[in-house]
Image (cartoon, rainbow, N blue to C red):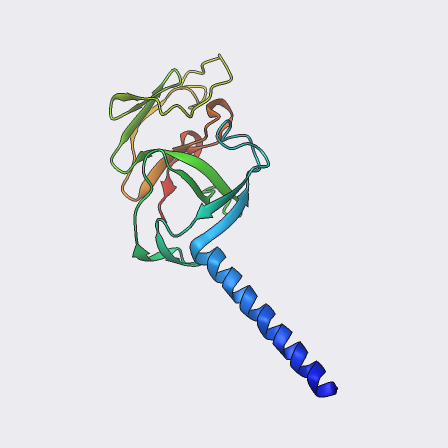
Length: 174
């Protein structure tokens, strides 16, 4: 009877270890779950929403080193991306890509212009009628700036309540 008990324990242990390894592989290279913690992406994503992020779409990366082994594509204007917050690397942020490398972005009285053309993707929500001058803060009047190579300019959907590229700069593609 003791031999059977040892075999059962060994079998369960092997099954659990294999399941953990598969889950780690999937989370590292393919898909990761996130919960939306703030209202910066309202009305697209609401506080408490759960999302699955496709990690494979932009390439296969080495975990922790953030080095891309097999590039597949780069984020495009309009994509929603999850990235490490540049100011506090312990936090993940989720925002919409507004401009990519080479694009010039300018915001005038809450209107976005990309390469001189008015940009209205239909996802931005403004809840405050007050417009701040550039000298006070960059929320409503920003730029013009050109997005450097290897970077993105991102904004939250809730434009008046989003901490984004207007305040802390570009997101590095790495």
